Image 1 (tube, rainbow, N blue to C red):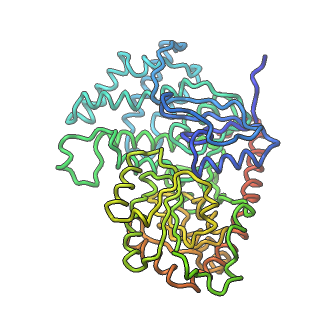
Image 2: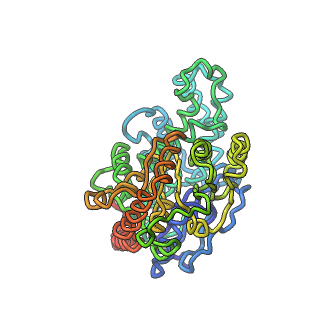
Image 3: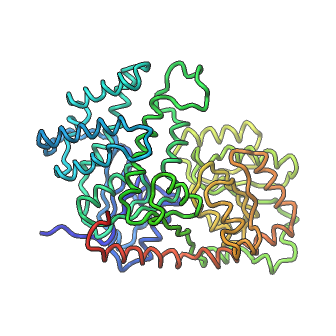
Length: 508
């Protein structure tokens, strides 16, 4: 029986349908809005020890998703390469490592082509534990990092190569087009799928993957740092952190080089993709869209209210998002503390799941208690966010990295002013992207990232000025209605899919 060929195979990393969040919701709506197309996916996760339970009621046209685990060591034998092909592959791996810091994508491009010529089969033990990788590792250690602990270097080398082996050896479904929602290991898998199946691939980056991984690596506790860390300038990264960053940078360049189109959500990201090696002619901005009917009637329209301030109740302020470090929930908490010094009658909510980074969530609870805000800030956990949009006076977003936050579009649609840090498309969403958009007026307040005082000032400026709140609410609804409808988003992706599915083969 012939293997089924799907219209679209999505290559995902730690998202849909197993992890909730903005990207997962975006994927869900994309699939659901194109019932005429058949979708499948390969979702990359860390380990099989993590539960892989659906967090969405998937549409009927989304079937047979597959899972690939980065850090699980499968001892099952795979078909080996010929000695000649394997020697070529090992040399390409060596050249790739020696290309660190160069502007091009280094030996990894040759590595991928060598895999394609040999059938792409690779024994994990040969890649990580064999004599040749041992010699390559010794050469790299002696020439590049002789001053660090060899034992720590060995384990880092192994830990960085095992994920690549698992991605390379993954069984991929047949599809007419492959669509990856980030670079990194998902990007590598999409490139391999495109090469092996001779079909085009698309890349959509909501946030610039390499930039976000740099933030995570810099803050990481799981990557070993040298014992004399206190002697280094604090902003400098250690040897092992730079090894991870090099991998992510080269995988991004590889994905950009092979994508038929490179898409992102706003112009700032597009410029970063071009700086990262993407061909400007293949880049495109497609902003997120929203289904207006889901949110527009949650609150009365500001233009129908003379003074929307409710004298009998508190101001209600919401943070909507996962309780994870990149969302910088602690800045929101500290800002609320500052606001309470000026305005006593406020109620704040942290609205979102806490299970992705339990340690960070615990630290946020402790900070709330330490600042005496137990009665002022409520952690809601995962809830129906519309129940809170219906009563919020203000939404606050304090992320240190974002693409085009869906929560701002949702708040805009409901007529809720927003205070957001100046990351990603936040400024465009609140101040306008084009002259026509800017003419609508601001629908929120932009602050510096990780600055509680700035965030507090934005909150106070809006809360204490009823006319400003009213004007921002009107601008917010008008902006999302005119420039950010989900129908426009779906139509553009439908056209891209149809274009790719009509191609005779992969675009080089």
